[in-house]
Image (tube, each protein chain N blue to C red):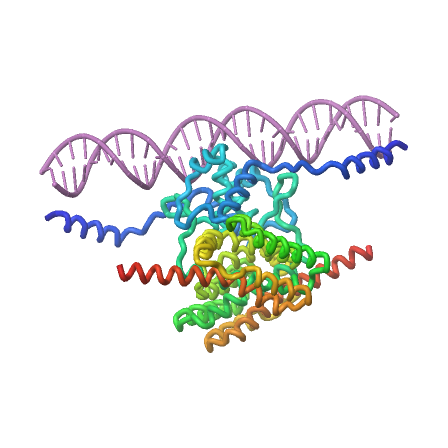
Length: 245
Length: 245
DNA sequence: GCCTATGATTTGTGATCACACTTGCTTTGA
DNA sequence: TCAAAGCAAGTGTGATCACAAATCATAGGC
């Protein structure tokens, strides 16, 4: 019987080869736009055009328009009555609204994670803490993008442990929505001698490692509140300036 | 100066005319599919094809594929690795997951609404309660669709008062995701002599009218838990049957 | 000089076509 | 008789075209 031998042969080949994956152009465009939005590459109120993005990404309009449609439904972008699309502007109400939603949902996610993380998973996030300190020690000209990426990985590594397939996409949507706002705040931070972010992360990890859900939630809320509060103050003083002028 | 007169004239005309709206085909397709999903017209695990839907809706494939893409990003539909799309199947984990998320977010929304609703808004939902009783009294062959629609209006009328532009789309997404599950439960309910839904709604309105956020939240959670719990039991006994067979 | 109207350009939307991949059935060969 | 190869129908994806609406610029009139 040849069959079993052929089967075995195929299996050894399969073990050595890594699946090639069949990502569509649309998926790549979508991911790229997500990355740009969370990273704050687009500024609030900026208008995006299908053809402009298609040219920038070197594709046709088709994948771009579908990606834009998806981003609009998750409120990462906004469809104006003129049918043009822009990244949502920052308002005081929106900042408070986003912060409340993020505290609620990410708080719930981390509380769940606190009761479910095993020691290996905790070790992973602890290692990321180390990475963070390391980068900080080197202090190579404040690489904001790397810091932001690491921060994102840190949070989502934890959220993934909550075991909820419903909450995680919602958190991603919230990050997408708050991305442009946060980036504005981060830049302002970096000018105004920022406070120690690592401190909050350390208390999060500490709470997780002793399975203290409530403490983890509180530490997380403190962590994500900081840039929002900063941005809030900045916006309020700016609007006062505007009134005075 | 004619200008002011013309302006006035235009305004009086504008006051009499109702905006015609420029809904695109894509929007209509999207709304229609949403309605179908929340209403449970599609059953869990059912596969949907672009061309099939386009034929059913009498349009081309273009609006349909964009609408499907949007529904996939909000997890109302599921993209299989084969690139075909289906409505997500029901599992026990998913039921618990959805119920937890809905309790959390809709609970927060109603708690916010409880502190913000004015007497006119409360009167509106009270009136809906009356409508409900009325329909119930007539008892015309248990019009499940009308009941479901009224139930949806009742809930969203309240949620709209929470004043959060972030929470409401999330709630809509959750209804979209739980629509197919709920419908299965509702049908089972109607077979198994259902309990009094109106009771829960009455206690919700009572809590709202005395601005008791905590009581409103609890009543709401009890209301939305019921079909989920029912479905959960049904699924568990079904899987036991499956094992026995 | 400022406002209004007319034209050109840009932009989103929908339809159609071409292509690649999947799926299911039929046929063929051992 | 059964399994594998091959063929055909179906399906998603991306590109291009046609059209309508919006935006912008320029010219004309008060």
